[in-house]
Length: 59
Image 1: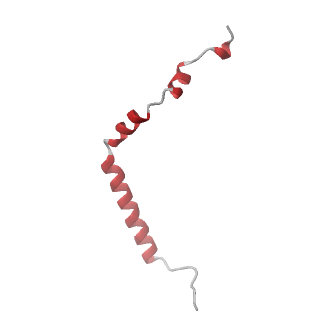
Image 2: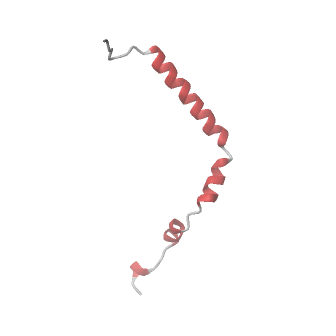
């Protein structure tokens, strides 16, 4: 039997990826995702509020 034809444990794990289990595993930390999004929004708003615009338009 050729070495390249043998299946290793890593090959089987990659093919049998269970998305539902992966999703449920990280769903427990939903509040961390929400806090991160809200915090990123406020940081972006603060940054845009206090920086001066580079380009100004006029009519």
